Image 1 (cartoon, one colour):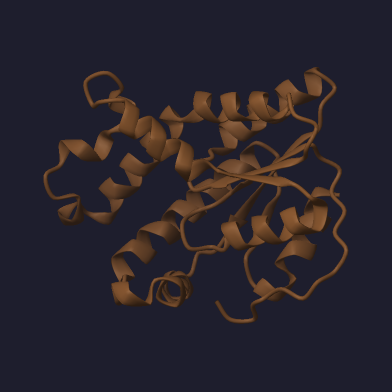
Image 2: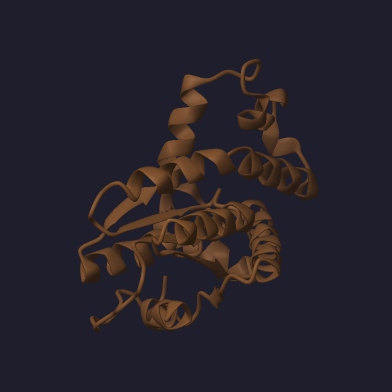
Amino acid sequence: MDDLPYSPSPVAAPWEVLLIGGASGLGKSRAAAFLAAELGAFVVEFDDVVAALQAATTADSHPGLHHFCAFPDPDALGAERVLELQIATAGALDEALLGVVRNRLTVDVPAIVEGDYLTPAAAARAAAEGAARGRRVRAVFLHEDDPGRIGANYADREPDCGPQPRRAAVSARYSTWLAEQARAHALPVVECRPYATLPERLAAALA
């Protein structure tokens, strides 16, 4: 990604658990790592949780986690169908996200949970549940609707994979859906660019 690495600057965020959602290729992991280093926070990559759940279950036992398994060649699916399946999979993981947040609140170390499959609905539930317990759970969603920019990010982090325009197009559409849902749940949405100021803008959105 251009304009990286971030320039160091003090970041203050009033939260015990921060959820950073957004589509693939937007810079969530880098932003989370930077904020974690600034604040001494622990980072949970929710994609790892998703991979573990999918490895420990089957399409018969947990069909909501294995939507893409029903298609021998997922790459042949149209962009709209891929988007539908991605949204459905994310929704099936809402309870898992809540479980992660509840567990992190038992530890006196601030945590950042980031990943593609965080839904605004689950994030809003986590924030409300935390507030009911007197705990500070916050959420923010990164947004980028330019497939070309997302494709360039993929090329930067995955140079051996070659151009990925189809994947970037789906990611941009998923990002738009997440942003719309986040705003509907009164959660902040932060544009990814310019990347160099993303941590500061995240902190401002959560202040």
